[in-house]
Amino acid sequence: ELLSKIKIPKLIFEQINELKNKYNLSNELATELIKQKINFNYYISKFKNINKSLLTNILVNASKDIKARYNIEVNISKENLEFVLNALNSSKITKDVISKILYNLSQGKKVNLEQYKVIRKEEIEKEIKRIIYENKNLTVNAIMGILMKKYKGAISGKELIEIIDKNLSTK
Image: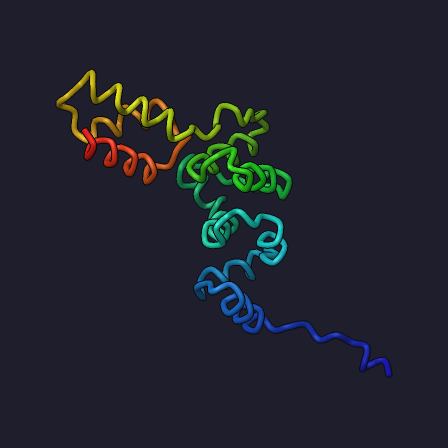
């Protein structure tokens, strides 16, 4: 009777296979989620507006990314991680500023999300048109550089290049 009440835990390879199959993850990412003891089911159900590939990458690699960018080891608290994921989930920030925000939070700095807010495409298109009008001979890379400096992660580089290309083709 006592033996029948014992729940046998899943083996690690079973847990990895379950994640791989349920969420279509690579073996490496599923393995890292299990190794780092990340409850992926919890995060995937809580942050539904975040692409699961991006979410997985953040959960697995945020500390490594901060180490690579800032040359410092950090332990990201669940509270700080969820703060950033909530902001991303509600489109208050872009993925490009996640490491910077997590780094600042890990250093005990107060973070004002307003400085990282997402810029509307219409505002960027207006700025691109102004830049093109004032500087007719600028290359796409030059325009990109000006805008990346001005908007510092408020829009992804991919989105920005798409908007520039669209506006240059209608020029």
